Image 1 (spheres, rainbow, N blue to C red):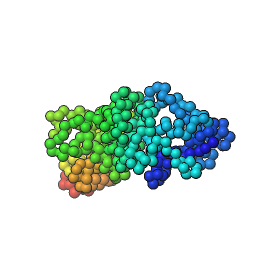
Image 2: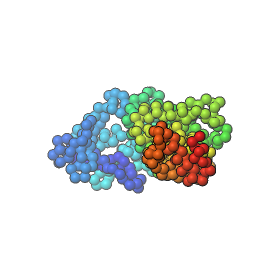
Image 3: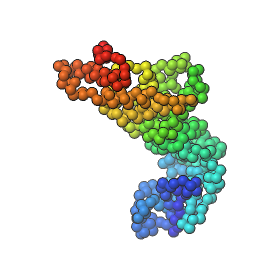
Image 4: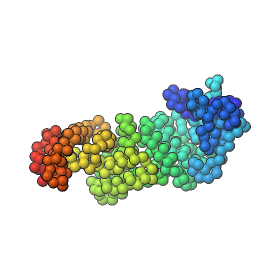
Length: 413
């Protein structure tokens, strides 16, 4: 019975990166031997055990055989006879197929160390094509290891997987899992570009893929419109360390432009409404968590309004706060502003320019929330008058905070 550290822990140690989790492969053991040593079984499809003290995962060396479509279409075989090299052969990339013995010796049957030095993401073997999730994993690693390139033969293999229909068997839960992790990497745009280059983006998020085919606007730099603008905004969110719901909202905020007729593109009329429908569809297909879904839909609907804040009167600002439920959910609204900040800065030459919404809306929200709604309700003789009076009072408070000259009577009209 021999134990080896494998996968990401070995890779990250060799790259000089901090190790988050350690995985171990046990060669020459049976489930009964593991149980006798106090390990606790946790695996359902194949034997995985928790160490009785460290709680780290130890998996018996195993082989796998394709028996159907998708990432679940495999049968596994684990026994004391399975070798370490056979176990490593089923892994996705060469850099993830390196093992280290307890004595410190590296076992590298597929040239993973050389690929680390060459900064190359390369598939470990022909079995790569059997699991479509590996397409997503390569794209995610491209977003994490930004100085790595994808081997041409690996990209060609990914394209063939898409063309053969294997990628169509990806299930929403695994797509979301890998997409969410990729969005939180250093340069998430590399994940989207990789998926588009191999053709998988059109299968996973066709509405996003369509953005790259939208004709360019004459008043924008040709490199920053539509799909490329979305990727620049997404990387802006990553640079600022924004949370997943913000990054996901940025990714989906412009989907409506993909359905906007070319003749209408100079001002993109109606693209927000179309974008709301597409964002809802994308969230449903991905089974995105409610927090991510709600923020994505809000941004699709209102990012244009928020960008136009310099033109808005106080009453219009309050209406926007009310429509976005900002008065009851200020934290979500602040995240909406973060996403819209990335939309504004995600253009060449705009990265460091001030964004008016970031100054106006927080002050306006604070002023609107300072209004005593209960007192206004008590002062109204008729219940139906309460909403109008409350809106007028909030608008007056916002106007006073922002230095606008509007009177309360103008808000009522």
